[in-house]
Image (cartoon, rainbow, N blue to C red):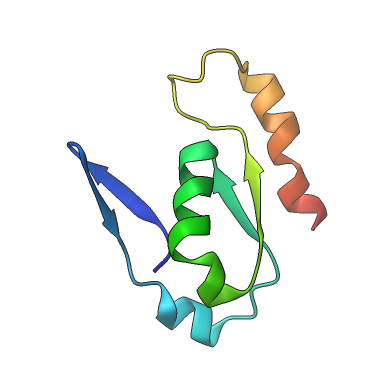
Length: 79
């Protein structure tokens, strides 16, 4: 139950167990605070992996420039 897609005002939790059961996942990154909130609520207890919350790439996050977002998201390459 990882990942979500917002449809109108409803959220749809997707089953990601095939990926989690067959891949060696060592880190999980969330795209913004809302994704982090739902990951913690629905999935963290299943995976046992704490997520790293990265700044949202949504256009609504106008406080972050593209350059600043790229710099923050580079952590994925380091891990």
